[in-house]
Length: 146
Image (cartoon, rainbow, N blue to C red):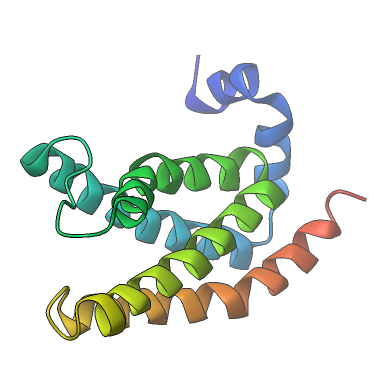
């Protein structure tokens, strides 16, 4: 049994639709997935080195939020490929909240000491990319689900 047949058995609606997705949407989802999986990797490393709730220097709410991204980031990736509208909504919600929390932490709680500027700038750049491209992916997918 080939990969495609296994996928059809596990997620029949997904497999049929994914085959029909416009190439641009497939590329966008791949970029989204890579970025969220990179974030997941960073949070897993933090958990590995610091244990549960590893961000002890931060207020508890921030610590819980950043730790929760260990599960929310891969959930967004999963949903993008299985329930794409839910995945796009979660992806946008994650990035809006993550950028807001990180900006507040970097410039209010821990001015210029918390994270390298390149890390924050890369999150902002990905967030802008996501915010600009999700509406296009949303519209292109609507044609498939009518």
